[in-house]
Length: 457
Picture: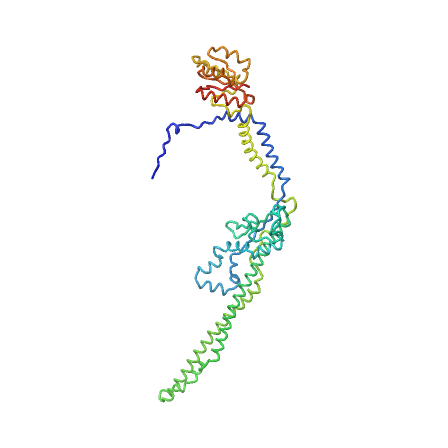
C-alpha cells in the first residue's frame, strides 16, 4: 500500500541563502579567539611529540618459495618424471605452489607453533591494567590471540603481486621490537624445517616399504626360475633333422622348445622385477638425500630486522602532529566561535537578521535611499546605542522618523505600535544581547517589520 505525502509548493520554492558577509564579520569579530584556539591546538599537538612515549618499528621481508609444498621436486628427477606423465596440470600446479600457498604460509607464521615460542622467548606476560589496577592473569604468558590482537601489532602482510611476506612490530622498547621480529623469523624457519623433515621421512618410509616388497618379489622370481636358456635351441640341429622321420625326435624337440619358452618367460619376469628394484633403489637414494637436506628452509630473508637507536623512533612525528594540530585547531576554532556566538551576553552577528548595514558611516547612503523611498510611512528608529553625532543631524531631517530608546516599557510598545516599519541601531559587542532578543521578540509578536538593522562602530 502506497502513501502519498503532500509537500506544499511554497516549501519547494524556498531557497536556502547563506550570508557570507555576516559569516565573515562574525569570524573577524572573533579573530582573537580563533587565533588563540588555533595556536593552542597546534602547540599542544606539537608538544605531544616531546611528551608522548616514543615508539619504535622494526620490520623484515621474507621471500617464500612457492615450491616448498614438496621436499624433492627441485632436486629429485623421478618426481618431475612422474608428475610430467600425469598431464600438464599436475606438475604445473605443484610448481606454482597452488593458489593458496601464501595464504597457508600466513596462517603458519601466525599459528601458536610460532607465536607461542616468540611469547616465551621474549617473556611477554600480562601486566597490571593501565599499569595500576590488578590483573588476575598478571605474570602469566599472554595468549597467541592476545599477542596478535586486532592485526595492528604485529602486522603480517603479503606484498601485492609478489611472494614476499612482510613482518612489522612496534614497541616502546627498540630492543624488544627487534627481538620479537627476529624471534618470529627464526621460529617460522624452524617450523619449516620441521615440516620438511616430517615430509621427507614420510616419503622415505613409503619408498622403503615398496623397495622391500620389490626385492622380495625379485628373490622369489629368481628362486622359482626354470626352463632352458635360448641358446639351448642352437644345439638341436641334428635333432631337428631327425624329427622329420622320428616321432620320438619330434616329442624331444617339442619338449626342448617348451623348456626354452618357459626359461625366456622366467628371464623376462626376473628382468622386469630387477628393473623395478633398481628404479625404487634410485628413488630411495634420492629420498635419503632429501632427508639429509631437510634441515634447510626455502624461506629467504630479503630484509633483515635492524636494531634501532634511541632517535630512530617511528612515532610520534613532529610534522604529523603539526598537521593534526592544524586540522583540530580549525575544527576547535569553529566550535569555539559557535559557542561564543550563542553564549555571548553582548550582541553578536549571528543574532542579526537579513537586511544589515555593517558600517553606518560608510554605507549611510543606503540608509538614505531607504528613508527617501519610505517617506509616506511612519518609521521608528529603535536605538540600543547612541547614534554618532556626525550622522544624527542627517537623520533628523526626515520628518517621518521617530527615535525610540530600546526598552521594555509601555511607552516603547506604544511607539512601535504606532509605527509602520522599524529600523534598529545597535552595536556588536556592546549592546545587551538579552535585551536585543526581547525587543525583536516583541516586535515579531506585534507583527511589525524590521526593514534594516544598522550597526554602529
